Length: 319
Ligand SMILES: [Zn+2]
Image (cartoon, rainbow, N blue to C red; front, side, top):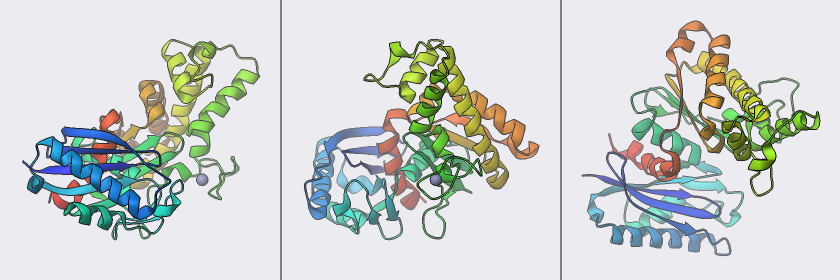
C-alpha cells in the first residue's frame, strides 16, 4: 500500500495527517502555528511534528511516497516557494516544499488550499468519477480550483481559479481587488451577513436571535435559523444560492465542467443554497452544458484539508 502525508497549513493551526492510496486517513493531529518564531523555525517545527506523527502511525516511512502541503496566500507550486503569506509574513520567500521535504527525506509539493480541496474532491470525494471538476469554497471569501481533463489548471502565473473575484455586476460593490461587483462581495461571509441585516433593518421579522453565533449574526447562525424554518434566513440563503448560480452559469458556458463541488462553512446549508443555484444555472446557461453539469456538496467535510493537501502529492506522484 502507498501512503501520502498531507500538511494543511494555516496562520493559526497546522493539521497533519497520513492517508492511504484510497484516501482514508490513517492518522492525523493538530498543531499550533507559533507566529513568534522565524520562518526557518516554523518549517523545522512542522517537519518535526510530521516526523513524530509518522513514527506513531505504524506506517513504514519508505511506503510514504510524498508530502503535499496546502497553504493560503500567494505561492509558486512549481518551485514550492511561498510568496506572500498575509498572517505569517516571516514565511514570505521561504521554500516550504524544499524545507519540509528535506527535513523528512521525502519529495514534497506545495499548492494553495483551494486547489488542495479541489484535488481532494477530485481523487477521493464528490468529483472522483469526473475529469472536469470545479471546486468552490464559500467562507470568509470565495475560492475556486479548476480541474480540466484531469489536470489542475493553474494559469500563466499560478493564480487561476479566483472565482470569488469574477464580477457579476458591472456597477456593483467595490472590491479591494480593484474590481466592482465581485461574487465574493455578495456571497462571502460579510456579503451574506450584510444582506441579512439590510432586510432586518427594513423591519422584516426574523427569529435569528435564538441562533446567534457568540452573539453575532453569521452565515452559520443564518443556516441554523433557516434549518428551523426562519423565513428571512431561508430567503437570504435562497438569494445566496441564486447569486452563486449566476456565477456557475458563466463558468458552465466558459468551461463546460461536469461537476461543481461546493465546500466551505455555508455550504453546510446544502440544498437550501444548492437548489436555487442549480435553478439559476439552468435558467441562464446554454442548455447543452447546463444539462451536463452537476452541482454537489463537497464530500470530505472535516478532513478536506488533510486529504486535499495529501492529494497535491497524489497528483504529482500517482501516475
Ligand atoms: Zn474582487
